[in-house]
Amino acid sequence: MKRLLIAVPAALLLILGACSDETGPGAEPADTAANEPSSAPEDTAPVELDLADAAGACPYIDSALLNSTTGEDFRFASGGPGETEGEEGAPAQLTCAVQTGEAAYPDLTLFIIGTDATVEVYEDELADGTEAVDGLGEAAYWIVHTEDTGAGPALEMGWYDGGTIFEMRYTTPAGTDPAVVEGLVAGFTELAVGIAAAHAEAAG
Image (cartoon, rainbow, N blue to C red; front, side):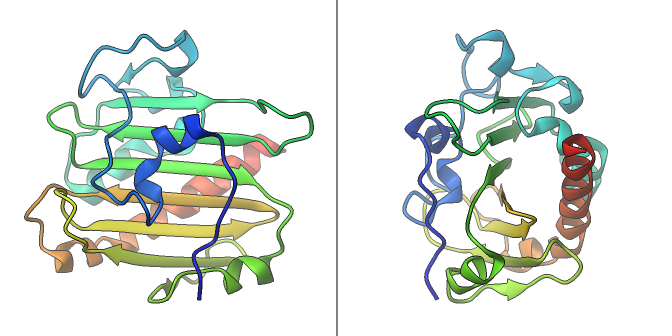
């Protein structure tokens, strides 16, 4: 099966470049406090400790669950744009990049976009090698990427729910055992369920 292709603005691809197979987890991380000071507008500036205060998709992430699942201390987040931009009638697009502040990896990226595609189209366009996730949206998958990119293995988890596509990617530091990353699937499934519920609640 092919990977689902979604036309997104270049700015979003810069934030979440690690979420595409073409760029991979070795792409440059989002501008957050983990690498250099940000000159972005206030609504995309790094936020320390409290993801609920960040923009974009960040408030949907349970930071305590993220930390307990990974054993890391994620402290910085940058999200955007928080509202529909560009062409009138375009689907809303939200992003979030989260880092520990200690190094570029580990990091977590979350991408949320509305789509006119049906769940059948979504399932048909999934990449080969993906595993199904039960109890998450109308269709969901996970896959661990182990390409040699300079970073470690990356767990990608995506799902479709009510005309919205979610994609989450957790990239580990170089040298991480892929088996360890696969062992995080249950925890990230719980995190994803919480993201989906928070998004649904916010949407009313």
